Length: 95
Image (cartoon, one colour):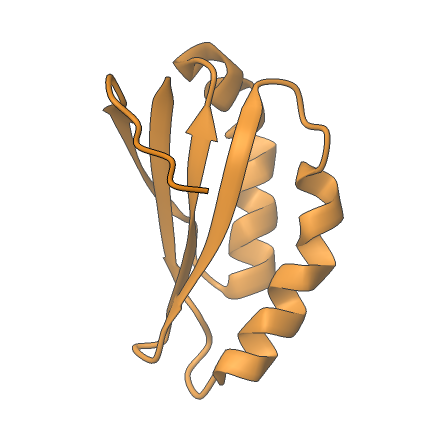
């Protein structure tokens, strides 16, 4: 498994509620996406937005994080995203 952490600055003054509305608008694009196990949207009042993605493989992640995808994020939020990949050899799920 691969965990990808994606971060990008949100426009100044973006509230949690505004970020939630933006994120809800993009959520359907990630439903049933091949290789994506789970996605969490992130917000802090910096304001910074992003996501934590759990992927079946790095290859699956890289099929999504294309130049077009990065451009779309930059157009939506004003800056291209930073992406960091981690191997996830152990996962604890208390659900």
